[in-house]
Image (cartoon, rainbow, N blue to C red; front, side, top):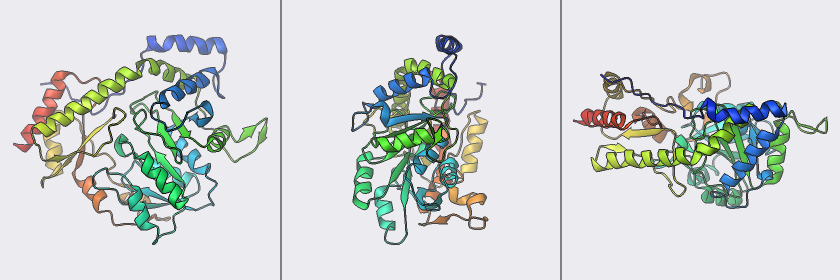
Length: 377
């Protein structure tokens, strides 16, 4: 019997690949506070972003930070919204998205997602504007699928509403527009992984400048100019990032090909599964692969079949935020729902993440695919 197929295995640089960068830290004697490695990492990030941005991305258009959640908090605080302003956000997301809104002193309002993309879309928000007071939108690149930056740019301009894009797992294939502010995560489980880290990108340099100030206690020339806290990236995480840069194109190409192989298998066998609608203009390279079971099946039974086959699975974004007790209507500070959660509830019932990582051998994929076939036969 084969060993358990892991759902996800991070793909980070080896000790040998890190060593030259660690030697530089020893030489520089600089460990935090935007040291030379962080600045070098940011410069290389600028070069990568050029291919997906609709503007010339310079160093003043992005800033690194300690993690993806801090990136969202900083982005929201940079908007200068009044305390407890209402932020519309999808319920189909990782809870950190909503936690960041609360941490920023703002009030989340939950909404359902589109049946095809599994995302909060401009059309959903536009339909809600006559019924609800919405001060800003925090949309999510659900499961790493890129949002339509052009549509969100148009929406933001049309309604004069700020839009933040939580693109935590969409680095490298998320297009970057001129009106929104984008946040990314470099957590160990993400496609571009450095262990922990975050990134904020915007064409609006004043927002990035404020985010950078806030990530360093709001300090400039030893004076506190804005309310901030410590959310900087360390030189050690930047070292991992610089080592990862040399591996990134190979990782991205491999993940993209795996994604296409999985899709081809499911479509060629005409399995009764729904796949998330994906914009593949920039070589979609996800860190997870999630399938939705169409026909009526007991998901408990499906999970048991995978367990029997020694295959790890996970119900991503389950339970959805609106079903979490701490955020429910019975909580001390309940979060309101702007819509019924028809699509989100359906996704929660019928979606399942299956093994998808760069360490999978051909025999592992065969075991996974044969198990899927057996479930439907």
